[in-house]
Image 1 (tube, helix red, strand yellow):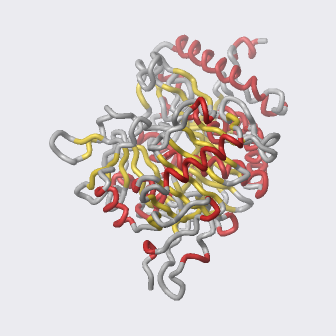
Image 2 (image 1 turned 120 degrees about the vertical axis):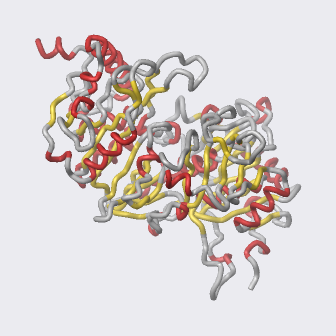
Image 3 (image 1 turned 90 degrees about the vertical axis):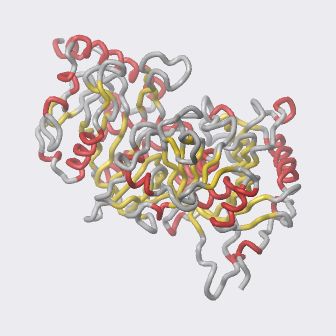
Length: 544
C-alpha cells in the first residue's frame, strides 16, 4: 500500500509540474515541515504557533472577482465586490504557478459542505506548510485512505482550486491590483488566487464567498455566516453575529452538540456545516470562560500571531501586541461534543448577536418575521474605542446579512431566502445584545456572559415563549419581563441607565443610524419590513 504523501496529484489542468508537490501530508508530517522550514514553533502540547507576517487579518479592499459573462450581471458590484480583468488574472495565474513549482510546495484535497447533496471538492495548493495544515483543519477531510482502495485518484478531482503564496507579490502597475497582495476569485475557471499575505483566513473566506454565489442561485440553499448547535432533543439553533459578538463562544455549549462555529447552509429541511474545523478567536482565552476552545488547543492545532510569557513558550492569551485577531484553527472533532457529520435539522431558534456599544438594545428580545428581515439585512454591531485607529467613541457598524464582505449577490437575495424559510419553518428569532448596559462603552458595563447564557438557555428551553413581554418604544422590540437567572431590571436596558433622558438621546442616535443605513434597501423592501424600522422620536409619534 502506498502512503498518500508519496502520491503526486495531477496538476496538468494548471499547467503545473507536480514533481515538487508534497501531497496530502499528515498532520505530523506538516508539523515537521513547519519546524524544518522555520515557519513556526512546536509548543509543549504539540500545537503549533506561527506568525502570519504583515497581515494578521483579511484585506477586504484587495479582494476581487473576475468580471466576465458569468459574473457581469449576477454579482452585486460596489464597495465589497471589486471587478478584475480576466487577462490580468490569467497573467497572474501563469506567474504564480511558475513561482510555486520552482521549489517544494504543498497540495491538499478536501471538500466543503458536510451535506452529501452539496459537496464541493476543493484543492488547496500552498507555498507554506502551515497554510496546508490550516486547510487540513478547516476543510472537510477525505480520510478513507486505507482498506480496499487506498489510491485517492477516484476522488481527487477538484471542482475548485485555491493557490496561496505569501511570498509572491503583484506589481499593481502591471497586474491591475491595488497593492502587492490580493485575493481574486474566478467563478468561471473556479480558481482562487491568494498572494502577498500569510493570513489563512483569506483561504476559508474565499470558499465561503464561492458558496454564497453558488448555493442560493442553483441549490436554493441559504448560506449563513453563523455558528450552529443542536440539543439532545434534536432542536437546532443558529447564531448570527459579526466578529466580537460571541458567535463562537455562545455556540460552544457543553449541554449541546456543536454543528459548527462559522459557516453553514440552510436547505429545505436541514442545517449543515460548510467546514470541517473551527477558526476561533484567542484573545483573553481561559479554560474557565471557554473550556471547549481552550481544550481544543492540542496536537496539530494552529495558533496564529499569539505572544508568549517572557522566557517561555507558554501562550499569553491576554497579550494582543501583535493583533487583537489572534486565532486558533483545529478540526471540528477536537470539540468533544461535535456533531459528525455536521448536519442537523432545520433551526427552531435563531439568534442575532450584536455587541451594542451604545448600550441601547435590550439584552434579549423576540422578533417577528418583518423585524427579523430588517435586522438580518441591517447586520448591526458596534466598534468600540481603541479597536481601530481613529475610533474614539462607539461607532455603529452594519454588515448586511452579518457577512456583507463575503456576499457576491445582492443582500436582498439572501434576505428573501431567509424570509421564505422563516415562514416555512416558523423558527423563533431573537435579538441578543452581548454589548453594554447601564450606559455606552466607557460608562456602562459589558453584559455578563453568565446572564447572556441564561437568556439563551431560556429561549432554547421554551421558557421565554410563555413569558410576558413589553415593547421598546424606539425599536419596537418585544422584551421579556422575566428570565430565570437574570435580574428583572436588566431586561429593559433603559431602566439600567441612571439618566434615562441620556438613554433616550442615545437610542434616538442609534435609531437614526439604522434608518440611514437602510436607505440603500428601501426601494426593494416591502411595507411590512419598512414598518419594522426604528423610530427616532417615538414619543412624538405616539402622541400624534
